Length: 112
Image (cartoon, rainbow, N blue to C red):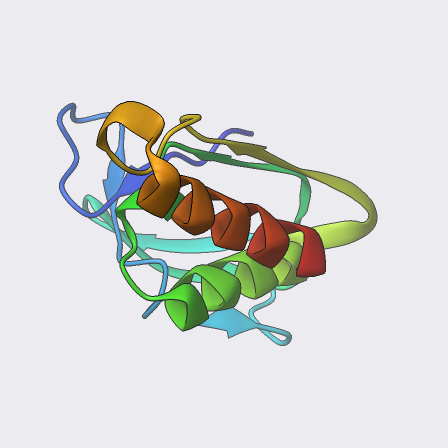
């Protein structure tokens, strides 16, 4: 089963949810709770794979990025895999200021 969601879905096959606000429940009794086109909750340890594609670089606060990674890991079964796909540059031109930002971003990913 694949569960795709976004803050602002572009297609009807993608559910609407804010991952930072989405409850991850240990007693949900099911993998996901859906109402209409909204994802309401996700069961902890419900997924073999979680993919976060081009989302973390749009989250402005490092603490929120870390919270998203922690929540994603919480959704995984013990043997599950978390895949993070991101763009290589976080600032225009990859200049020195952008390099520091990119390094901090990588360090945050590795720490999580």
